[in-house]
Length: 519
Image 1 (cartoon, rainbow, N blue to C red):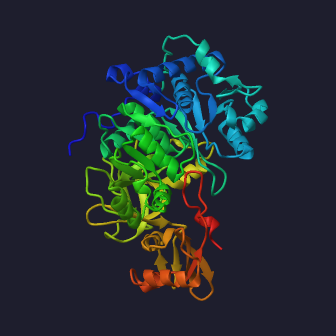
Image 2 (cartoon, rainbow, N blue to C red):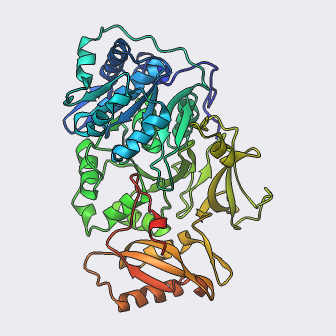
Image 3 (cartoon, rainbow, N blue to C red):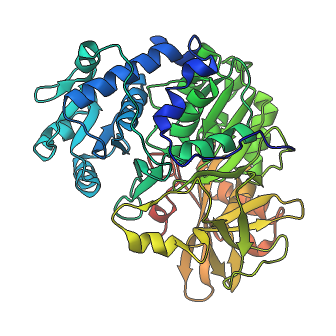
């Protein structure tokens, strides 16, 4: 297919806010709904006006170009306004999950050199306690506590004139995303202004927007996938971003879909599994507005895809991304869905499955999954950590740490993290493959395969499973599960041990924390 004119062509000088806010009128989006939530909505024109006024207000209160400013907010229109107002100034929004505690907030403040913070009244306590470290102050929306400045007052006092967007280079830092730190201290991932064109064009190619689209991402916007699909790309495409401020339980997600007539959902496999775990839930909520669902962040098993398709009549398009870039390759309406795969590379993105010596391997074989590091969507590096940056970016590649295979048709499949895979009796074990089979068992909602050290065979295969409501956690159930797996895949991949748990441990963005299950 011919690529759109100007696809991923990035000017030398650009600013994300200029791309998303300053061109609203030129693109004819002004009267469309930019954001909708349970208590209201904002048109593109109204949203742009608030962003400009907030930029004026920030500058009047000491925020400067190049200053790092921590954002501690759950999803809300003020979150989007604050991020874009700061980028418009040339300041650097620092995104961190709002569930993290005071010690973690303190670390990110120090590591990012943040001199100010923006929060909500309900989330302000850690920042108030640390305000002596923030020379430019704490700004709070929806009830500013003592010692903070009300975000609303900045907007009310600001002039109506547009704020002149900072003149920035495409390669200049635009914002930071801090990881949740599940394997150590959080890393500060620095993204450039060029990201919004490189990934924005990729987004439009994979899933072309349609008139009337309303997109909703279940993740918090501190997670770059949700930030892109629910804020940055919707603004760029003239699409409505639906905001759910509550945590995404199955009921809350489906209520939001029904209430706001969502057409595109962006989530993680865990959310879809939790929805499917509820008997007849597809008959309770109106899902007819949805033209497609999207999954990223963790493997979506073919069994989950098939059950969702059967019950909701809707595709789940899986795509693969990393926080250091966002989307790399994926499924979408342009090509047939191959359940269990993560799809095809996005045009302009070069990926490969290679052996230890960077040689290509045969289709179907498992090797290291690498992404060419010259991609314009890639991060600038880890803040204050050149050693870690060099560890993952070298020899012309970004080393994902994932193992994968590619079939004859060019579809990729993730076999697992290199440090999650293990050998049993000298044979390579891919957890994802076994988990997909386990999910096909009628008693199982979720499953995770982890190694269990064994002196004789190296590692035994241990399955940790969450059962559907009403299923008894018994030895008989465990044996039935083992026998079911044994009939579907090679016998040596059958779990030696099957255990049951109420819920799998997960990160703030919904990924299963395998390491917490390893004995």
